[in-house]
Image 1: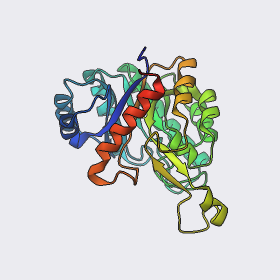
Image 2: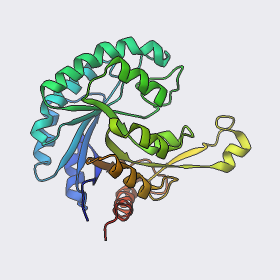
Image 3: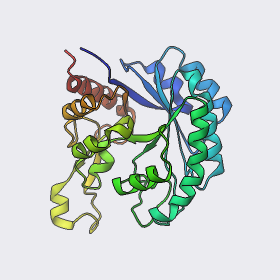
Length: 278
């Protein structure tokens, strides 16, 4: 069976040595940091990752307000080729508690420079579609959580090396149907996070989507949520996608704490079946 779509794992940069030693038949790894990363941190991660295939790096801070995040992204972009990858993930950033349109001018200023810097290093930038607790009108860290926002972002910075780091979980948590969105946006999707969500219909019927204390949506590993991952693979193949789906742990309440590693392996085996492995 062709493995043009790889299945891997998201690993924290400051603890990647532990994750690599733990084992597992992951085909790729995305190494990520929160807020920023230094050259020394990248050197240590590169040493730990020598025997592994790295699908990408990632720095997830507020790219529009935090200069250390911008500096960390540039450091990661410059280092990406030494990891054997051409991909660096991030958030789009946000002017804190301002609307999506109010953040676009700053986004254009920052990402016009970042995409040019990345192009000079042969690197693609991927923006994750995480809500980060925000919506169209207010929030922090990320405005790239909806198709309407993506239209504004890619019109402001029409760089070919700027794309999406997409996962269906964040769309399900907005009650968006992910498959039709994937068909439309596949040309701009360069990398996927393997995370799912379960929509609690009984909570929606009882209290709506924000009328009570119970969450109407909960993150799950692939295989325990509402996404048909076999169809995800099918749509990706139809679009000619040849990148990685890297499983993002530490979110599924069914696998808390030390059980998270077990949940990641369960998700790996499930995604392999969806890919068509025998």
